[in-house]
Image 1: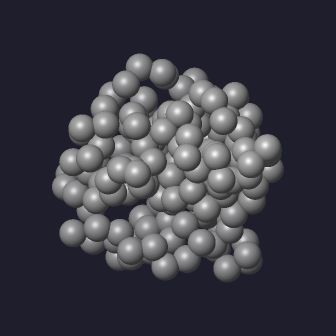
Image 2: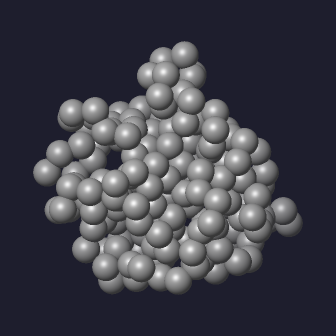
Length: 169
């Protein structure tokens, strides 16, 4: 529920519902899968970020991509005849993007224990094919960090989530 968020996070979330958090998003890779593995504890089949195309450590923003061809088996079962990329995995992808920018900002691999999904909204289904693009912004407050992120497919916002938890080394 938005009412439990700080004013700063609630405003960022509302903005993320309406338009991309970053307008001019580069497509060239700045972190590849091997570099991402050095920042994330996740591994296949649960590593949901293939490449990072933008890092802005000063503002805490990351733009990442995931090739939906890797989710072939998921699409086969969710749902047969009308495949859709699961919302829970969209939220997880936002979380993984947040961990990446957190690690870059802190100059080290950062552990993160998610404690809350403060808000999530799914506005469009994500069908098979192509890539999803995740735009995430991390706001840190001492031991706590909140990631607000968008999952986009075909240039459209498909979901928005705000995740909070404890961060540390």
